[in-house]
Length: 374
Image (tube, rainbow, N blue to C red; front, side, top):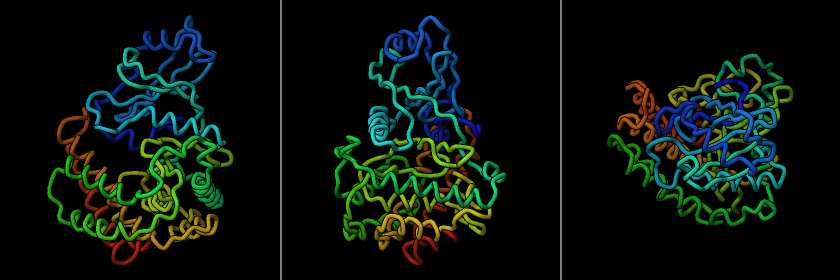
């Protein structure tokens, strides 16, 4: 990924759908549709189209001309899993965030007429900034800048979890109770439909979560992102403040500690062993100056005042969810649902699945933060 971009994430580059290119966008049909609907758009002027980062899942195209610079987001080409890639949901959530001054791309229009591009799509303003997705991206920062970035990252998370959902029009986005039980059911079901082999350890982790889930109290629902991590946001290259948080596909109403747990799973530290088998945001936060995982949890608790007594459970649940996602990617690779992918990529996803299961089981025994350092 380019360090300067608007909207494309690791999950977008590693999920189902044939490899796409800019030529996969029907520019003529799009031009006819946007004419008179998109402010600043001129149907008489050629439209420059670029596919961002090659996306194999939700595809993001940069479309521009002299009067404007936008991003168009649509589902992947080819096979689309049921209930996934809901463009209307992404548009609704981000439109609500626009209403309450949360850093998200500005939404412009949603199209549900499949006669235009063959699928739902939406158009938003292109956001220029930096996406930090690798160790190389953060290597040039000073320790002070890395610490500032850590704080800004968590401040954005706490802002998200403190939003007035009614003011954002998102108070009916999901059910305010039962989040944990629904998550366990969802990801257990997903495992059964996409597993490529029997993994008894996954069953052990699922059993522990199923047993413990009903005992986890509902402490009040907030908007949760579901995949909150460093490379799912665009930051200002001068201040390292987030300009826009991206990839709202898994957002819903739920327990905010679930989001914190996902942040911790993606956070890296020197000496991590199992975490290195997860090919997402590799070593982005390992360099000196970044918060440690303990500091991440302490900072969040201090700013929000939230009870973290169920954090170990949520780390185990996050590992379970991400393990199922990695196995789903492996399934799609082995099933030939992605072009240009080798067997080594399937092997990498397999190792990621196994590592996440092991971390999740360790979280049930020695605690979530400690397990992540294994």
